[in-house]
Image 1 (cartoon, rainbow, N blue to C red):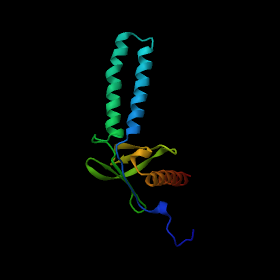
Image 2 (cartoon, one colour):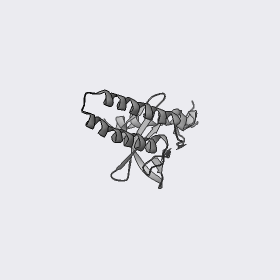
Image 3 (tube, one colour):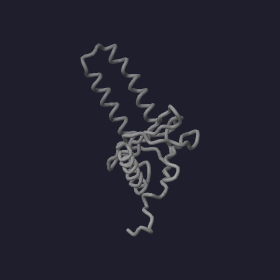
Image 4 (cartoon, rainbow, N blue to C red):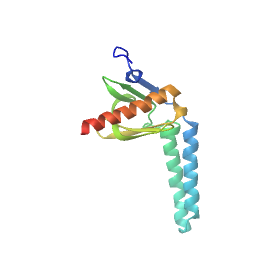
Length: 155
C-alpha cells in the first residue's frame, strides 16, 4: 500500500451494539450448568436453595448489561477516532472513555473494558451477531492495535 493511501483500520470506527440472542443463550447455558453443579454438590440443602436467587440475579444482571442491553451501565455503542480516542455510549449518551488493558480478542469474541470518568468502569462484550461482519473485524483489529501500542509505550 502506498503511503498516500489511507489504511481502512485508521478510519473512525462507529459501532451500535444490537441485542445478542447468541450471548443470551450462552449466559443461560452457563448459569444452568452452574445451577446443576451447585444442586448436585454435597452442600446442605439450605445452602443449595440460597444459591438459586443469586444465580437468577446474576443471569438477569448480565443479560440486561450485555445480551439485551437495557440497564443504565449497558454499553450500547462504541466509537474510536485517532484524534479523540475511545467513546462509549450508554443510556445517558456518549462519554469519553479510556481502554483498560488487557482486552480479550478472538475470532468470535471481543471483550473490552473502559474507564469512564474517574472511577467508573464498564465492559463491552461483542460477539458477531451484535454488529456486522466488517465492523466486528475492524473492532478486533483496533483493540489489538491499541493493546500493542500501549505495550510499546510501557517499555
